[in-house]
Amino acid sequence: MTTAAQVLLETLRLHGVDRAFQVPGESFLALLDAFYDERRMRLVTCRHEASAGFMAIADARLTGRLGVVMVTRGPGASHATVAVHAAQQDAAPLLLLIGQVPRRDLGRGAMQEMDFRALFGGVVKYVAEIHEPERVGEITARAIRMAFAGVPGPVVLSLPEDMLAATTQAEPFAPSRFVPASAPAQAIAAAATRIECAARPLLLAGGPFEQGEARAALLRFAQDWQVPVLTSFRRLDLFPNDHRLYAGSPGLQVPEDQRAAFESSDLLIAAGTRLGDFTTLGYTFPSFPEPRQPLIHVHADPEIIGAMFRADLGVAADPVQFLEALCERGCNAIPPGREAWIDTLGAIRSRLSVWTPRRANDGVHQNNVISALASLLPEDAIVTCDAGTQGRGVYSYIPFFGKRRLLGALSGTMGYGIPAGVAAALRFPGRRVVSFVGDGAFLMTGAEILGAVRERLPLCAILGNNNSYASVRVFQEKAYPGRVVGTDLANPDFMALAKAFGCGAYRIERDEQITGVLEAALAEKGPVIVEVKSSLTSVLPGFPEVH
Image (cartoon, rainbow, N blue to C red; front, side, top):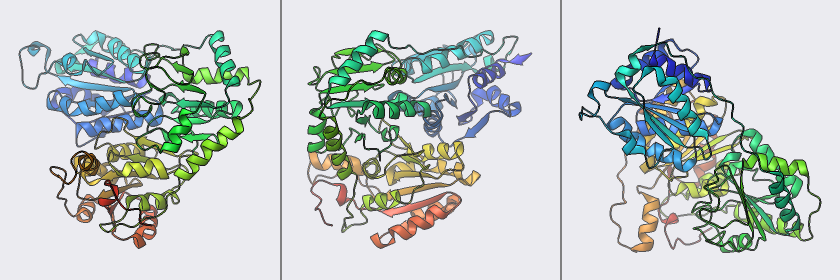
C-alpha cells in the first residue's frame, strides 16, 4: 500500500516534473516524507512562499515544464498569491499544492483554514480540494492538463493533511496525449494571400514561442516570408535581436518615430499573444477596438480572439503550427517595398539599441553599467530582471540572441529577480546567470540568494541602490511635482550583507570602476553581489542629457 502523497508525487513525475519549490509546513508532512525516497525529483527549500512561486515560474518558462510549488495553508497560501498572479500574467503553467486542515475539521474555522476556491477562483484556471485518496492521481492529472490547456496558467490543489497520509490502492495517472489544434487549410491560404499582398507586414510574437523548436519555427517563418518580427512585452529573447528582421518590442518606452513606423504597417499578424495593454502600447497599436491595418490574430484560446480587437482573420489554433504550416506552403511572392520597410524598422531599432554613456551628479547612471555588461555576457547567459527602473536599460541595451534568455515578470511584481535567478542557476549550473534588482526588491526576496551560495552557483546580482522606490517616485514626480512622500528608503550596508550571505561583494561608485568591477564579478565561480550606487535623478523627469 502507498500513501496518497506518494501517488501524487509519482503522478507529477510521470508528467515530466523533476523538481518542486517549497517552504515547509506541518500541513503537508506526508508529501515532504514522500520526497525522502524519491531520488528522481529535487526538492528546493525556499525562505518565502512568494519566492518559491517565482522560482517555479522561472523554471517553467525555461523548460516548458510544469512549475510546482508547495506551501502550507493560511499564511503560506496567502504569501503565494503574488506568485499565482504572476503566473497568470506570464501565462506560465504553475501548480500550487496547499496543505489543508484535516478533513474532519473542514468548515469549522480551524486554525489557518481557508476556502481556497474563494481565494483563488478569480485568477486561476482550476482549483480543487481532494477529499478521497483514491482520486489523487485523477484530479492531479486533470489540474496539470488545465495548467497547459489554451493559455497556460496557474492551478491550485488543496490537500487535507490526513488525506495525504492515508494509504490507497489507487494508481498514479500518466499524462494523456494531447495534439494542439491545427489551423484549417482555408485559414492558412487566406493568411498567405494577405501576407503576400502586404508591403509593410509585421508579426507580433507572444509566449508560445518561448521554447527551442517554437523559436526555430518563428525564425524560419520570418526568413522565408521576409516579415519583420516584434516580440511581445518583456519577451525580447523570442527572436534574435541582431537579426535584420527584428523590429523591436512594444513596451514602456517607445519613441514617437518607432511608434509611427509600427502604425504605418499595412498588416499585423498577432501570433500567440493576448494583445495586452503594454504589448499594444496602451491599446493604441493596434488601435482599439478597430485596428487601422488588417489584423490576423492566431491564438490557441478562441476566447482571446476578438475579445479586445476586431480581427479580419481570427484563427483558433496553435500559433507555432500555424507558422510551420505557412512555411510548408511557401511564399509565392514578396511585393515591392518590403525591403525598404525592413530597412526602415531595422534602422530605428539599431539606433535605439545603442547607449551613449552619461554622467549624473548623484551616482552612476544605471544604463552605463547595463551597456558595459552587455559586451561581457556570454551568448548563453540567462538574464533575470526585477521590477523597477533598472529594467528599462535591460530591455533596451542588452541584446538577446543565440541561447541567451530573458526572464522578467510581465506582472511587474517586485521580488522576482533574485528567486528567478536562483531557479535559472539551479536548472543550468554551467551557464552565467545575471539578476538585475533594485534596493527595494532585494530586501523583499534577496535572501533566496542563499540557495545559490549553498550550491556555489554562478549567479551575479546587479543591485541598484538609489535609496528609493524609484519607479514609483518617477510617477509621483510626474503627478505631484516636488511633493515626495513615502518613496524614500533607508538601506543597510549591502557589501556587509553580501559577505554575511557568503557571496562575493563588489561596489561601483564611479563610472571609471564599471568595467573592472564587472569583469572581476563575472570571473567569480560562485554567487556575487555587485552594488551599484545608482543615480536617482537620472531616472526622474527632466534629467539633463549630459554625455
